[in-house]
Image 1: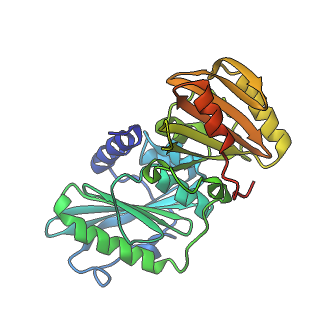
Image 2 (image 1 turned 180 degrees about the vertical axis):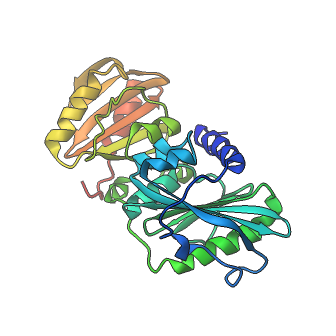
Image 3 (image 1 turned 60 degrees about the vertical axis):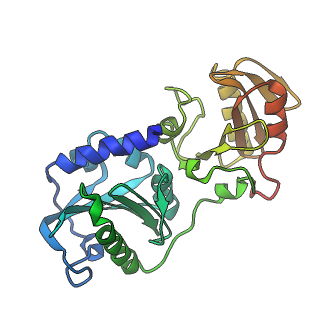
Length: 302
């Protein structure tokens, strides 16, 4: 089980026993299905709304992750069905790219046609559309069709989709393990996918965004991390800070690539325009250098 899957599993268990303590603006209620939208459901209690840091009142162990993706507010509604309880959570982010980002935190499971992308796994449906990320879950795994009906009813109420970040154009055309792909804005999300450091070694601030994925070409798989900083000077500054951080040990720079030992083998990093690229977990420096020279994909937006 992946670290991300364990994170969601622990949070899922926490939310099933959490009490509703929210309130305030009901501006998300228009998205919530009624019995007229999905047969056999009945709302239980009022919709609970959490804005900004009030999300800690609902999920004390996971709010930091959502705030890292520029969370704005959430609406939570419980439903009763003849087969058991279902919880619907709707998270409003500031941008569609950030709704995709929180969705990409864990996409291991069955991919279904709900919203723009969706994953179902053991009583938990997640999907995103526009600037909304939605989680629908139940302890009864036999309620899968009800979860899907709720999800499709919500997705239908959202008038249009949204765009992912342009940094995804830097993905190579082959070799990316899709369920390993994560779009991140900070170290909390990244470290849950692949632990790099407790420190902000990538110099991530409000202007930085990144992707990480497993790359399965010859002599792989490798861990790839790409971060876009907005302008080349910022990327160069971040590169120099990272090289001095000690994540890559006994490193040396040659031909624009900083190579050395990493926690699981060998690693390297370079800067291309405003993009810093890291390749980790290689078996030797020559392999890392070969992969580094193939990234980013020449058809990228950088």
